Figure (cartoon, rainbow, N blue to C red):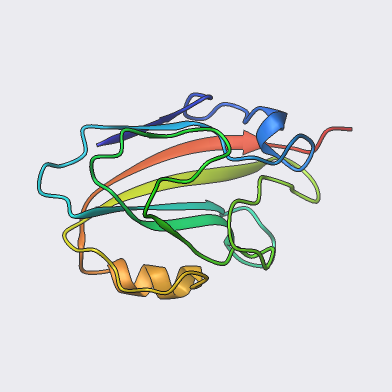
Length: 146
């Protein structure tokens, strides 16, 4: 399984998808999703945040037939969780200082999840722990515009 974006792995995320731009989610393509997957999960977080791994977007119950998430949209039927900005939905990269990495992590699960909209990343990670059948990661980088 692979995840592709409007940037390549290890490259800078275009500012359009950050707090310096329009702060909308980038288009993401999902490739070779396992045939036996019942649902997909997407977690976007910043492992370089000084206080904790900072959640920017969490989505679950994405149909395994989903080939892509288009810019500024969410897959029909999927649920969104509470990001660490305190909002439900996408919050783009916005590091206080320096360059940070942003991990776009896609998980294929053997179940659909029974989590309410607005759940937190910890709840989602606990719920998927024993149900992951495949995983893909796309890393982007970003530092604020000067």
